[in-house]
Image 1 (cartoon, rainbow, N blue to C red):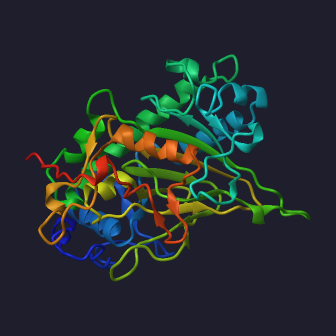
Image 2 (tube, helix red, strand yellow):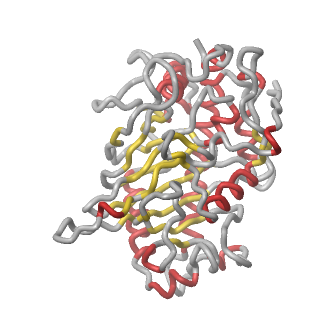
Image 3 (tube, helix red, strand yellow):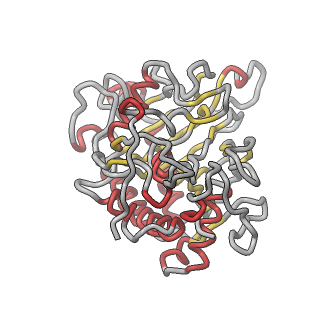
Length: 378
């Protein structure tokens, strides 16, 4: 049974159980998908992808062309150089009040909190995007937003744009796979990704400083990064040390279960469902909550948020709306969802409901609760 057919079930969250014959698992019990097989058009791998998305909400991606282990090691080395830049340089490029690309407690600009009353985040981050998005005031356009060759050689924009292009190629394979897994017409999602000037995505080079675990450790008063769902379509993550936790979907129906560790698998990437896929599928897929725990060891990760083009309208697609399962999400453009969520964070409102342990951003109401259904073009 396809995920599109599941949309006709009246009970939100009801879905396929992921049988091992349909959804291969790692030795630790996490779903794993062979991206090269998806690229070759494997029906079995598309079915496995649908089972992983519906039953877990995430998967490990193996055999990812263009992002070899050697390349990823070089990117971590470059990220280390970025994070070792002097505080004065980081301050120049700060997220709020600068050019909009760096945040961290080391310059007095910690990550905005996803939990309104949550612990302070330890993470430091350098961001890169092609379609400008920032909370910075009067942000400079183009490469001048980023460290120059005089500050960092090779220059930040050149290195990260090459990475962005590599990740775009992976994104196209995965989006085509999502279309098949969801039984929607080809290019339904790809058109949203490629429309106009390109997607509204971002790369983040993240560093989580450790404290060494000595006397006076203050880990209890901090977090790596608080629980949240990502605001885009899906996220491609790589990590070099433990700390990431995911909240898989409950077995047998409903929403999400408890937190589980996401182990480090050096040759693979974690892929999670974002807010936009939840809204497009009318809740058949649910955005994947995740967080990073505070750790005594230092930790780094390379994150790519894969978004749609800025003016893409996102609302439930027709195959996921029925009389028994009416549209449950208001329509919103990609840019508006990003900007609204970030402004809410800036205002201290958070995007995670701590009491209910669920995302606020994924189901946020726009336009006074208006409902609209998007038709799928054949």
